[in-house]
Each structure stands twice: as C-alpha cells, then as structure tokens.
Length: 232
Image (cartoon, rainbow, N blue to C red; front, top):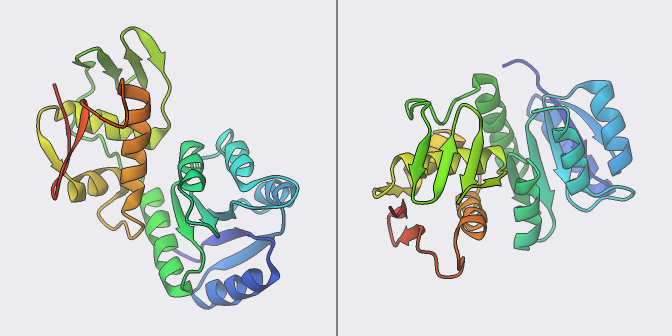
C-alpha cells in the first residue's frame, strides 16, 4: 500500500521517541503532534493516512481532537489510552475512532493493527453488503439503510457508523444467533487484529440506547459461548 503517513499525537517524550523510531523502522512515515491543538494543525498540514491519537493531551483532549477530525474526514483513527478504563474506550468509539489500544503496547503489534486498519480503509468494505437496502422493522425499531436513519417508537435515533452497521446486521438476522467471529468479520473485517472487547463495547452502547433496562437486556441478548441475538 506504499509508505503510509502516520500522525502520532502524543505528549510523553519517551513514547514519542519509541513510536517515531519503531514506526519508521516498520516502514511508515511519521509526523508528531504534542498536544491537541498541534494535532489539528498537523492534520491539515500533512494529510495523514492514519492518526494514532492519545486520549490524554494538553490544550485539547484526544476525544475532542477525534470529534473535530470526524467533522471533516473519515481518515482512520486509533485511540491510545494509558488506562484500561472503559469510559475512555466507549467515548473514543462513540465519537468516531476506528480502534483503540492501551499502553503499554509492543511496536510490532501496534504496526500490525495499523496495517489492518489501513487495509480495511483502503478496501472500503461494506459490512452491510448483501443485507438489502429496504427498510427493516423489528418491533418498534425501524432502520432505513439508504437514508442511514433509525427510529424507535417513532423517535429519531442517531448512531455512529459502526453501531449503525452492527444494529443493521442484528436486525436483518433477528431471531438468529450471530457468532462473535461473524459480527467482528462483517463489521471490522476478517483481518481485524484489535481487541475483541470492541464488539462488546458497541453492544453495550446499543443496549443503552435500545433497551428499557440495559443491565437486563431483552432485545440484544448474549448467548453464552456463542455470540449475540436480536430477539423479535
């Protein structure tokens, strides 16, 4: 795919040095921004192929940087957090990040994940291919894939792209158990090498928006050892 340009947004000098050396060695061109404001300026200046974006940044948080980039670009974004706190993951994915990693990480594993995200982006896969373009109604949920529109009992619901695609896949297969591997392959790509908890985070987000009691879901249910099912 050529020498991809990576914008590394990181304020810790030790991480910046290691990432710069490691990613260049892996064949990437690296540009560095040291805070959130610098990140937005560098993004416009270098037009990166991917942004590796730390959550905790001076001047402007990584979450806000991600939000601002998503207003104008679909360039892949991998969020980086020093904490395994779920809130960082959830908020990052909610505002449009494609993946996330938790410090500390191995450069080779990070490089593999970057390549996988770049490959999926360049192939522009359609995870809803073959699902049809007609409006789907299951219970009080109506999803129009062409208009990218969802209503629940007549009330409009806005979802990030991955949540929309996941709900679409679940609704089309309502009543069937979809294995975790199938969901990951269809939504994130067969070569996804990221944390499989990404799927669980998206399921949790959908439940929080669809279920009357998200802690005791009746619509999107977990089939232990297999995957998930959307109940009719």
